[in-house]
Length: 308
Image 1 (cartoon, rainbow, N blue to C red):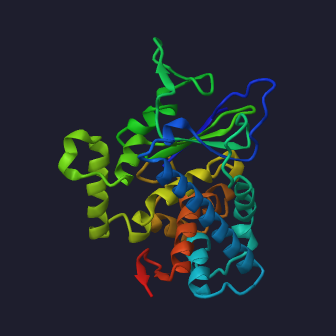
Image 2: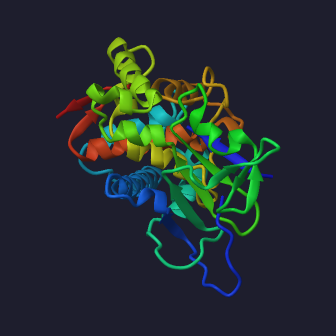
């Protein structure tokens, strides 16, 4: 079964060395315009995962969390604990294991053929070719996909910014950054709107409005968005235990955003398939919040960020 997780796969050739654990940039990400931006965001995402694992380890071992440690402990409680609970192994044990697994893939790979322990990051959709039967051929995995499993996931009505495709066999996880989202992250000049993917402009304007109205998004949801999105998607990979988007795929119910992740933690479901520790956005938001705290900010329970 193939699993598509949205907000793989290069077939190895016989006789060539396997890339193994790590991540690899597809050529579509290596342009002068976006290469360094994407590479920096991937490294930042892994750093956030490392900080989050360190906080979990210390919290579970009752060790000192360092400067502003109470705020870090509170983030773990807000994102993963039922109200009244302290950080514990039942709510954080699986996440602890999966973050350790993910961090084994934090080094960039430049040689060898990707295998099932490699994460390949894409910024373009050129590998997809439409067939006469309406299906789409992915040249990199030598496989045929439904439209929604391929480029269609980036072009639908809902605000998909990235997705991960995990295919069976000795194949890597494919992490696709949607081209419109990359345009957005480059800081599009609105004066040149006729040259820009309309979707990127629309969501840029909408997200700012939602934060101002405090309707859906909080400052934590839009701050350092690219690296947080990449961490979210990294947790969907085989390397990180293939986290879920709890209560998805409907955008109306899926546990995205700080407010919904806070509600999920407060609910404290006993079903491990719905726990916050397997919800990709809960993991990514916690990692991002801990990073902001370490940089000298205070993160509030409502998702706001205050400079200390």
